[in-house]
Image (tube, rainbow, N blue to C red; front, side):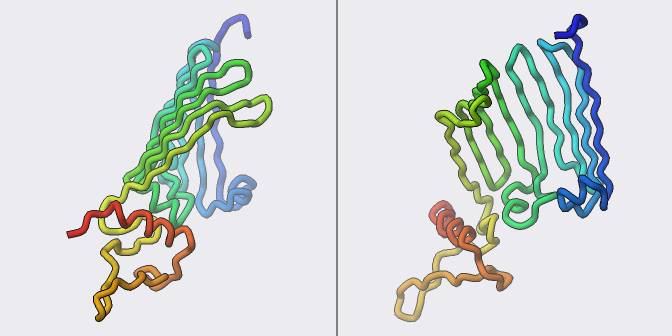
Length: 197
């Protein structure tokens, strides 16, 4: 530990379109990222902010005190990833991470929430051996209305045929595109959770 016991961080990344970072990340818009913080090695507080094409990609508060690290804030993965990820994390993905470091192990609890998704994960991460110990992830879809956030398929009851029997839903979305296996699974999983008149 330095004699002054002081930890000041001021890092900035600017990645224009066509540059090394943008090319490696397949970015179609300029990226900027900053990490700024002040404090000591025992107690530190900072903030990480990233923008992509002028839109805020992430804004996270960071704190570290005696081996305990907290991350709080919002991210918008849909600015970078299209399709199911964009719809699941809209309009933003709230992040809450608590980690306690000890003997090269990280006792971690993490929650991620959006209007359509809730993820609760936790357990021990063995950094020395690159292993997880008793680490569990619980993810739930939180449909906001009559449409599935992944495939945007109407979640109405299955249509009835002239014989009165229900017909399987078609394997295409409302826009006529083929559903992926994931989208089909999600639509079937979500349907029981949607109230029907």
